[in-house]
Length: 506
Image (tube, rainbow, N blue to C red):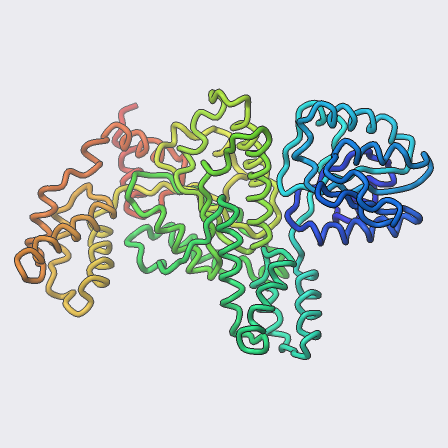
């Protein structure tokens, strides 16, 4: 249900206390005024701590610097006087016992009066004693239609038009921005060269990065890695390439649902994070990185508010890729944490959204320790597929060496014996192969020459791979994957797993 419809319903149903968490104060006040006018003779009263009430000449300044007096004003009006009382930043006073008690008293009396109190706040923080009388109403970021209307209005005001294709590109670039930021970035472009041009989309993207950076929850991740930078993992690559057009308008017309996400489980350093970046590049989608630890705040209700903000922002930027690195560390031992259930509520909100989301947000999660993942996360419906990324085979190691050396020494790739390098590095992960090449470069650089195949082999001989230092953990992961709990990202691993199953005694 749209905000205007839901808000109008709450007004008619005489919900006494409505809490709207949003940073778009001006836009939500406009929407509230529109809804109030549609209800008939329902006045809108605006209050803030600095200026008190604004509007009617008789009431200007009333309740200035006095949040309790702002509530007393509501009581003084006639019982049949319809009104919506918008209190800006009032969340700061809810912990005051006199304010809290007054709100509960008003909630009781306003049930029979055509009056509604609306609290506007940039964050959701409701004390326990007010949760029963408070209704939270979400105010989403502007839709594509709203963005298009605003952009067209701004362009018309300066007598400049864009082609339909250029306009669509600008509108799509503005998704995830507030109306105020859209106005600001277009004004910046006009101030820079006198008009807004389609090339100014770069300014919009920079504004979007700034917005995401300010949330301190998501990071707008630049992507340069491609699928060709991944050595091996043929099954996973094939799965990704098959879904490359799944976010297009043609796919929607075909009736194809947008892919939900992917869980990559496996040994450290095997290319899981690289794959997340390559997916965004391959599908030409923005990549958002979520640090789950940032969701948890110290104030009661702050963690849940940040989780909703993250979801709202990701959906506003859709289609996009949401990358959650090492999700096993973020949600390990959710039920046993001593945080009054905050972790469980955040986790519950997150997995419910994953199962029910209709937006084109493709979630890519990586995990090293499958044992610490809550079983609810592995249920069907959370992700489209779970892939196991194991240690690379000899053939895959050769491909990994070729990828790295083609970047490091593209003109001299033929000087390196790739087959020998792959053969002499058993049980090495992709990250360990990369580090071996770095060490070989140090050897060559220290002797004032280019590094050679022998330098790489010398560096490899001094490296103890994780496969030897964490044998038990790796064996558990391999057995878990061989038991059919996940699809195998590598065709080689698929054959090895089957052979292992046949070799196990009954």
